[in-house]
Amino acid sequence: MDKLEEIFGVAQQWLYETLMQPLMFALGLGHLLEDGYAASGWLLMGLIQLAVLVAVIGPLQSWRPVEAVSDRATIHTDVLYTLIHRLGLFRVALFLLVEPLFDELFGSLRLVGFGTFHIDQLWPGITDTALVSFIVYLVIFDFADYWLHRAQHGSSWWWSLHSLHHSQRQMTMWSDNRNHLADDLLRDSLLVMLAQLIGVAPGQFVAIVAITQLSESLQHANVRLWFGRVGERLWISPRFHRLHHSIGIGHERTGAHPAIVRGRSPALGGHNFGVLLPWWDMLFGTANFEQRYDPTGVRDQVEAGRDYGRGFWSQQWLGLKRLAGRA
Image (cartoon, rainbow, N blue to C red; front, top):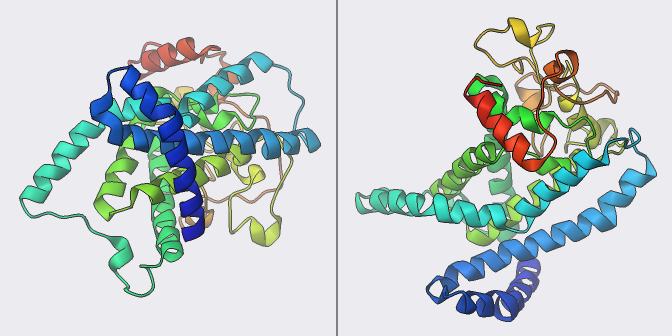
């Protein structure tokens, strides 16, 4: 773990000195060099992820696809979402809009004696090693992510945004970041607050986000793949997560049509909400390990012809209209 961090640090320093620092000086942003160094880390991690997508997950999709691709235009839009998120553009927006508020909030809390609680210091000699503390933080974040995902499906207003993610009828490795920006802003803000509260080091947080995103890209891939009877219960596979996207199975109340579920999300009663680990679905009774590969999408999209948009801006606009109850 330490060696990987060292290699990544050298590469980040090179990217910062070669690209980020000269660019920031040229733009008159020399007073933000420390933040530019952090941004170069997100950019480097994004470039690594894109390389893995193209070199590893892409060939897997070609090897054993679940379905033939018939609508490439929607996939091109998903590629745009992926580039926005993986190359750090969304992180920059999060930094500009939200992080100053967090800094002020936690600064005020520290002034009144409320310090950061460091989980990795609970068991000295065990969790203070880099690999063990990283695993501890990864499990904690995954547990939080499970409940955030349940909230995205359990709240009618949050589902009005999150349903965009489920509206993709042609799931591929690019579909993970197909989200409404307001949905991502809320979820990521809550995770950043959690990171601040439990004392995750910046490098560990970047690594946790990167592993989570890469795994989710594989989960959304158009590949007929599962991890076996034991493996399915250790890490979430493309088959396990595809069932979460399946129409009428993974993300709505069993047997209930959205039109008759007044004031509540049609997603209540769904399955497979886990992000990395299926343990939480197993523990809280939402796991479904059936061997099936069903069509994906949202029921009202298929049965009632509800429009979720095709291009980036139309999808974002329709999400806001759904939130306001006008679409």
